[in-house]
Length: 452
Image (cartoon, rainbow, N blue to C red):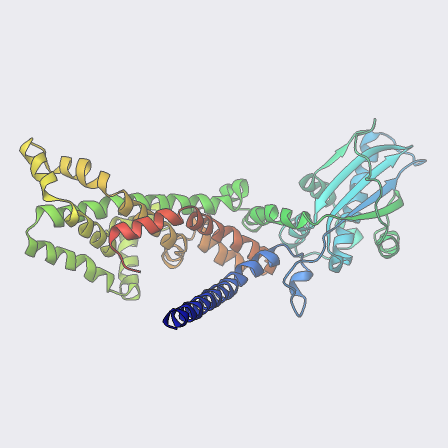
């Protein structure tokens, strides 16, 4: 009887444990999905075009991306020379591309190809992504203009637009030909508009389309180029685009990581091994007390002090604050140094080792878990830093990622999909580092004695 009862109890316990595990996994997955939803929504929004992003109610997944190809034929038309023919093809190219992008913005046309043919040969080809055309309308050549034929072709605008987009032309023919097997979903919609409102010299032969969903990912390339359009007065931003702000963030955070790892370890070594226990506690409380001072209370005095020092609107203003050892990191180092057996230091001292040898050859090599923890925490903490960098920089060449993202978001021409795309680019490094170094982070926390 007792055996049967024990067996029943074990079966019940096994079932209850299994139920608890299933419930725990289900709840964990549910909360993980809720936490990841904003990121998924941001990525999805970044892949939408300018019409999809404002649809109500919003859809989680982006719609299909269409690629449309136009074929214009110039057979039978007389031109004085190749330059005149090329000039006419450039005009038609601008009319077709910008007219289609403007009139059919709600059709998810993410890519436009224009082919110019003559006597069965392709002489001209140009290809543009929707985001490229939109940036020219929002910030570039056609900024604050109506998309009308006379305005599109005014002066040399069409030439500059085609040079920005890119094209191929050869009077003897090029090796680009329209794709085969294209659908004609847009033929009846677009053809009348091109023929009536944006009349081209070339004869519109065909309008074919194909679904290419990878074009949604290509939008990120143009998001990175967007700052060059918004801030054309900055040579560095024009040359490197959004990478200018990435490089600034890397410089600031790299300096912060090196400074905190070295300065905090030196302070902790002095407190742990050079000062008396009473003096060490006093100095440690000084650093820990500094953590309790709200930044808002010292923000204005610190800003005035930095301006008087000449550390304003330059890299010094961004880097100097990291020369103050962060109290919590000093505390971590000290706790770890206190755990190192004193016999190590005594043996080295008997051999004539000085303080620098004890610090560099004993403490630091044994502190790799603490170093990796502090470096990673410094990176994650300061990658998201915004207020101080925004306060001390006015020049676009000095903006860090978050400052640039804030200023770009305040631009009237910035669309929500572009803002989401830049936000995804900004948070991606932190996510990747957290995933790649998750094991090292766990080991570092365990080795540091931090409970969590």
